[in-house]
Image (tube, rainbow, N blue to C red; front, side, top):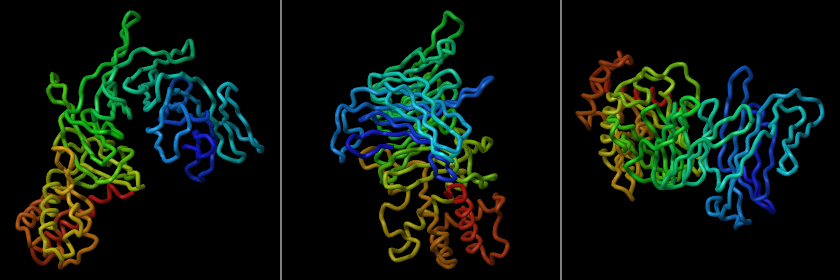
Length: 436
């Protein structure tokens, strides 16, 4: 985190998540800010856990109102530490890296037994904006509009550059699935690069572009959802999912879905914020297949953080659930102005979440916050009014109820009540996957 003082700088802390106490701390040089962070696990006869840090070296102290991106940087560094457990003594311990680095790793007395040991560093020509480990032997580094692959030389105990790939615009994020690397860039949304390791002593490692998005976005973060799907979010809050083309000869990514959140976003991750042993019936794995739920590891949510401190979650649902919730959304938006089911703000509902500066419209997404209103704020009579206002909604609800393991409510006296109660149960069940 940046430290505010006479000179802007950063420090790296290892914190115990249970107690919040600091286990170890590294102070960086004045005007040197951390821009990226990644862990690298190397497993063999002995396992090593490294913390890789990318920094930007500013030329001078700017106005404190300016963001880090607005201040000029002359270069950066890649610094690697070994995160290792130590036997804690009763008194404080001080572990210093070489004096020329002006860094210190400080461990608190009585804190959990870990320390950051300085291992290696490399000066780069620009800020190190993103890092990602590629197996046990490679580390991918984004420096400006270049992606560089560093290879671990076990004999010399150092990292050497083995290949690189130029980009059209500066990279801001990296994520790896197998040998494919998705790169989020400042203007070109996402690119997918492919790394090919050398075969034999005479071969050479290769890093080459294979796919690129057909649309532009000032990407804040991008991740793999599955081997054939990538997700990203730009700074203005536009969320998109794109698939690798089915035909191998094509270069452009296929746009799958998109939605504008209407707030500035910072990070995107994939997973569940609460560990669950089971998943709702209509939640599916992220893949190009229409109803594939075989891989529960990829059946979690897209979790997006915003600059204002909010969290958004997006889950993939079945075709039946999507069609039903879309009809529910349209029915609620069509209710009279003073009806409790109708939202007060015009931006509610996926059909209103368009991206004003682009031809890209909301595709394949329903607004879960609007669906939640149906369960949380409407009485049984008001739910029945919404269902009765749309014959398509009632027919779809009854049809899905017959095929669902939830089944229709046995105590419902008529089809109208059956449809309304099933929709409420479905929305409540789907909300379990995104509860923080």
